[in-house]
Image (cartoon, rainbow, N blue to C red; front, side, top):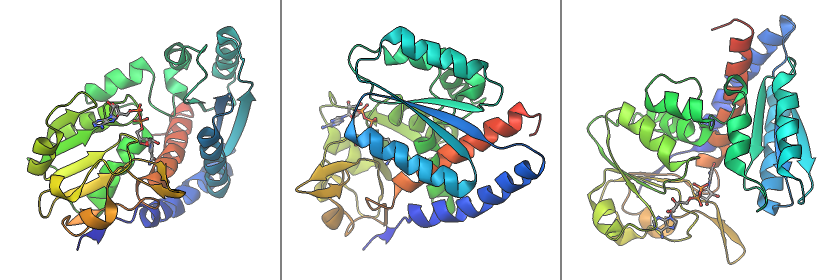
Length: 283
Ligand code: NAD
């Protein structure tokens, strides 16, 4: 049976360090401060925004929530981003996705000052990531790399299959894994031979939002399985992986909840502190 990759425990460990870092910054008169813009009423988004807020408070970071109505106009959201970009007291800005239909989310992301881009989703910072000259890393991808490193799971030369090609998870994760010298395959909804690919993989990361997509017969004995998905199935929170069956074959596996999720939140906080330090002339 596979060992559990305990993301929650690692997030708490990292959190203790970050709290100290924030305390030291505060002693110098600097308080990390970021803003989350949430447009509309997506119920999952509201939960994520609150989860971040709780974590920020725990870390000593200030998080402002700008809750905008579902009928917000593009220009209103752009104006808010401009205002936050221009405010020297604000160290980070992010837009909670998804946004309502009338909103061009890409245009909003592009508008964020790359120096305040806590999510690492501005074109400038995505480009830097692929050039191996990081400015900031998207939190979920960085959290997964940190988790594998913490459990001393090597990436060099390993066959990795990332299922999902979103800008938020799949693509940045592929970039970071390549940088660690893994051989990376990115699968997606148009992939026709998913099981064939995953059966060969030393490491499988699934980030699709499709419950029970990854089944035991798609996994090689001893593979490492990382489940990013957050899905509701029969009133239960589950990932993309058929956990009970797959854990019997995997050498390591992340649970849902308690795996990747807490690391995403923690690495967002790390990003806020990183940008704050940089904006204040610290390394
Ligand atoms: P997305 O909808 O932007 O992308 C999903 C990707 O999965 C797409 O590239 C699509 O091609 C692929 N896909 C969908 N069905 C597939 C299938 N049957 N086979 C192969 N590929 C398939 O989603 P996202 O924002 O990347 O999020 C993915 C999942 O991860 C969601 O469940 C989301 O809630 C979760 N998520 C979790 C965290 C976390 O911290 N745990 C963070 C971000 C996202």
